[in-house]
Length: 79
Image (cartoon, rainbow, N blue to C red; front, side, top):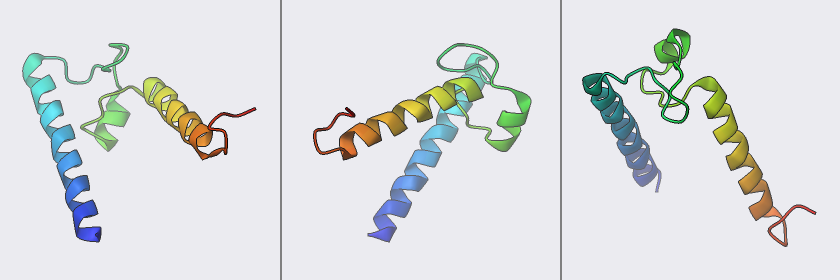
């Protein structure tokens, strides 16, 4: 199953790269998909296919963590 997981990760990475190339062609590379602010050179140097600025990425990560926590509780919600 590790092979399928690896293939999935490779496909996801290729899709992110493809999206970055499309944004480059459209002249929107370096702009956050959520808020349209600049992603920032430091972040783009580290992750050239980043689609979100660090602020929007952190908000997204926090939402995912909150959702995962809710799903892991017996009732599905934090009390």
